[in-house]
Length: 76
Length: 249
Figure 1 (cartoon, rainbow over the protein chains, first blue to last red):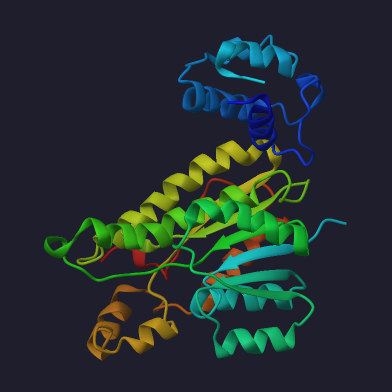
Figure 2 (cartoon, each protein chain N blue to C red):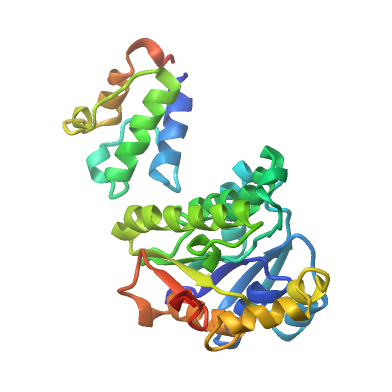
């Protein structure tokens, strides 16, 4: 998956009007809530075959940190 | 001020039409959906040209596209404050003649299209920021067995189960979800099927309903209540509307 696809998918999960550009702080969004967290777990499972634990999202503050969890499965 | 725009499926006749009609009388705006238009729909369009929108759509054709379809409608006419899934099909089919296709035909319309539309309506970009109300029209058949209704009753029970989970998921955003379980309602669909619903059948039904069999208005009354502010503390509930039929023999 490309970074652009990842950001589009995350925008859909968080149901935002404006597409994310990648340098946002997730904590600044009301939409970064428990349902969005579940959506991200599903995305990682479906797109990257990675089973994240919900706890692994607790300390995630930025989109960059979130993308690190996907490792090399996100390309430029 | 928050909009009062409600999506109603199955609007061309019966319960769906009655709900749309009553909402329009109560100054709501309504986006009505059904596979085909009808004389009654045309009459509503002419009476409420500013507040009644109609879209002809087969809800079973591309179910995965329905959430996006809702968003497109919302961009055109505004944010929604509610959704009533009244579209539904019934087939009378003994279990021994059942097939996966028959099951899917019923579930696609009665359940899956409703869930896809609820997904679209509850999107933060579509629903009013202060929340809203979703009502699914289930059936007494979800709780009481009736020969030949295996797919129909299973689909309506599935709606009740989905309703409870949606209610819990969406409560944090003040979106309420409830289901209404009508008993036997005299609709145009019933009147058209005189071979099945003949005089003897209607008489038998009447004997099972302490308050007699119902009218679409009886269902619409409670749906309008569930869409309105007076039910603001009500979610995750099933409402029997059946003239006492669930009291037993």
